[in-house]
Amino acid sequence: MRFSFILAGILFFSSCGNAQNQAKVAKEKYEVQKSEEEWRNELSEEEFEVLIKKGTERPFTGDLLENKETGVYTCAACNNPLFSSNTKFKSGSGWPSFYDIIDQEKVKLIKDTSFGMIRVEVVCGKCGGHLGHVFDDGPKPTGLRYCINSVALDFEPQK
Ligand code: FE
Image (cartoon, rainbow, N blue to C red; front, side, top):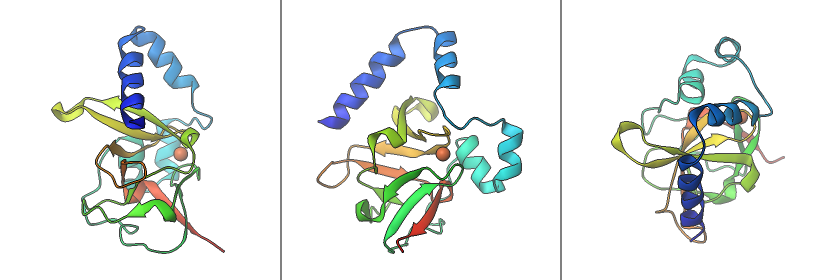
């Protein structure tokens, strides 16, 4: 239900306004703003490819896929706390999967029509870094599956 509402909101938003206005919004909405060159210097090649270039790591290759420790998953670009280990589940997709985010404000959802599919992209709400996608085939209580690239995340174990 909540997912449908979010999706309707995205479709509504994307149907209004011209591209110029949307580009302006996109530029102003992130607290952390860096040029591609700055990100390239700060991130590893793999992190840059996923977070900045919106790439996808190969499934079943991520360091955090099988991580079962208690703690918090943060954005690998800006340290924004995104997911709790409490909401991580085994999806079988080959990418770390979560059924909820720590706080709705921590991410932004963007309609993604690349590769001939309509998907909802998940980006970091603080830096705009690409994290992955969210699907509506997750487990209870949310029914959501945040399918996130391991390389876009860092893990902070609970002390
Ligand atoms: Fe970030």
